[in-house]
Image (cartoon, rainbow, N blue to C red):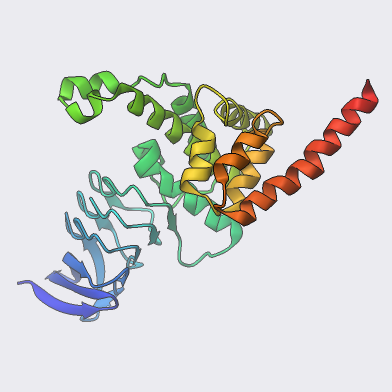
Length: 298
């Protein structure tokens, strides 16, 4: 028999199975929902399939600490979901496509560890189900460990090496005409996705090897303003216009040059004046200083 319960941020229906509780479905009234660790003095151990399906307003969810299983499509199509706070145990069952089309998901963090390093690995884990699509990396109990970071970087390197056309043929076979009709958009989006992941890893650089950091920077520098593909600049300006951490990664990767400086400032116009000032200071400081020493070397 299913029962209803008001919780922080919404309500849920649940079922008692033996000495454990399964959440059957949950409705979010606002942006944040916190599931209880216990209901009727019994641990909440399972989220039923489609429990949060298409919860359009859900931005943040806190999962029970005793959770042992998440069913298929539990958070599928939660288009606003950004943060998941979760403390998984070792024995855990994860269903199929639990975060399908959660395009804004950016972090999956342990609620008991809230430091800079934990924030970084939480953002890396958040990219696994929605950007890298690597089920073998979706192991929250191991995230941040050296071997996990090595596997993450290996997967990212593999993704960057794939031809931009990869996957397009599959869409043709599946009859996805809206994508097929615009090949150039598909290719541009693939390059932007690669740039997004490069920025993600450079900004969250825990355990990042210097050699791979150089490869990531080289990809961005090869797709900056003025290049045949401007994916790196499109991601920074179009998606993170007022976030200095992205402009910092952009400049450190060598994406701001004397050749594209004027075009970048012209495109920015009156938008994001603080970031525009940041680029101007960067040029007058580091870039002009470098030019001065280059002149002395001649």
